[in-house]
Image (tube, rainbow, N blue to C red):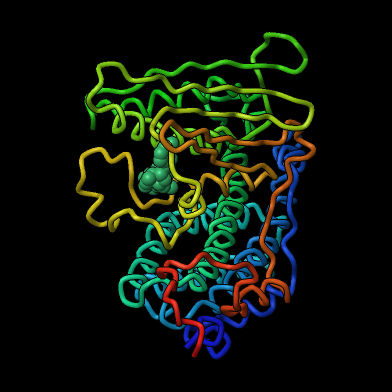
Length: 409
Ligand SMILES: Nc1ncnc2c1ncn2[C@@H]1O[C@H](COP(=O)(O)OP(=O)(O)OP(=O)(O)O)[C@@H](O)[C@H]1O
Ligand SMILES: [Mg+2]
């Protein structure tokens, strides 16, 4: 049976709370960086944030739960996906409980913050748990291009939704827990209004280098250059979430280091990783280039695929010493972080030489607006795509029929 048919006949096997239908009728409300900052400004109001989140978080959870319901039965019935679904259902119910509560009651606000922390902790292991479910499915039923395409579509949206709900919960808990972050007193929750990009690059490099040294007993150097379109040599700053930027850079450094060391195993000198940070009027671009041998063009798209990941099972990975490669989720999840605030992450490679990974971010905070999935007819249509004939010729791998009388019958 085709994937689309499996999806269509897929009746709710999971115990979906009624609230999901109610909240999935609303579209999520994407916040701009400015709105995030306003929520945390000097006259920040916990009550306003509470009233927004008690509606918005259930909307975002319900929208994505609707999509989970359209996964193939065989994936839905894996213990991992069932467990994961139960977390979502429980969190939704706990949050919905606050809808009727009095926002002027201080105790309610405190209880809400505690609930957010519980919800966040409950969802800590969503990524490895979902990865385990996909792996179980893959091992049992294999991968075909349609399944891959649909699972890719779903997981990009699922993980993006998770990034966004964690961002909302983090902002509220960090801003209203009554203390300032001693290491970063000027941060607004997890946002740095004056994030020094090169500083984050250096930090991510140092962490990846430590892993690389531990694992390979050597690591490449880094060369960082920055170009500011204003023509000044001032450090480049941006309004951003440093932990998101760090995550992307750390993943890219790990990949670049692994490729460099493994390609130059026998040589004494490792070519450095070159990073260029450039600020334009629209984009802030970070390009990381290595000489790690590159990847053929045919394989580039697969590197972002959750299903075609070649990484061994995460369970066996845990026992490894200091892995520079794990689930194979480094690139796809990093690209989601970049896309979350309207940026992107792309890979350009020259097989035989090396790879450049490029992170694009919005230079202006007014353009950094959350990119969120919404469950609607267009989304549904994606789950209903079936395998159609390709409208481009596919080169045949069969030997050409050159026999003299081949065409006569
Ligand atoms: N700079 C690079 N040079 C060569 N190959 C690369 C490079 N970056 C990524 N790759 C290839 O892409 C694959 C996928 O990378 P990705 O970071 O998504 O997963 P991973 O490194 O295998 O595992 P992890 O989840 O720990 O990151 C890598 O396994 C590697 O084969
Ligand atoms: Mg990686």
